[in-house]
Length: 317
Image 1 (spheres, rainbow, N blue to C red):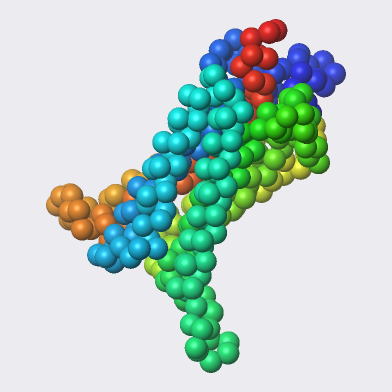
Image 2 (cartoon, helix red, strand yellow; image 1 turned 90 degrees about the vertical axis):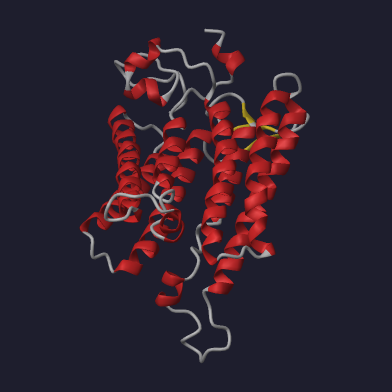
């Protein structure tokens, strides 16, 4: 359903957030959905660099290839913030700069996944033993680097203006237009679903090292699968109802709760029996930042509910 359309008996709404929560009609949000998505992409790039630095520090020596995402993340985030400032005066230049960063982010993600896959196989082992579940469980997280690629795809989606909103028609350089098979809003829901799926798979592979002995470990698995199904299902609906948006919102909030619980459990696991913080335990123990990826995907999912119109369009009502 496009912005402004209604079902019989419903008032017009400007976003799915207003459809689910009518009180939001009276709340002014200073940025558009795409602007918020680009800001989150910049923040994600920076935090990915920090998170990967901590992960790669476990071995005690960071090899040259491992420095690529560590350096790229913060640099990409800063460039995207600069692009946001440039967009205030020169939107085409800002889009060009952002596109370069996002394409590079996609490449870094796939390159990292390749390096991790190489670490997870035994190329000279007998046939049938070169790849197995144990290798995938104990190897570096194969899907982890693809977070860079997800951020890149989300960023590219947000960088291009959709005119009219929710039409699936993107304005490219000059007078060129790209017609998508579905609206940008639905594309965001699909991407959020894929992000939730990658997150839950990474969580399962990580927790499989413990044999799922702790019942709490089943919580992110169940919630992650639920969020994936809900997000993809919502993307498949052309005319979602208010109840559909409420279920989706609930799934995203559950992801946030899982992130908070997981972070608390990981930090508690890394503390000594006296509750003392030891840096080495946080470095080599349970990754305390990993559960926050659930909240990150949820944040992207909630941003997808915002008003899709550009700021100048929203100023004219």
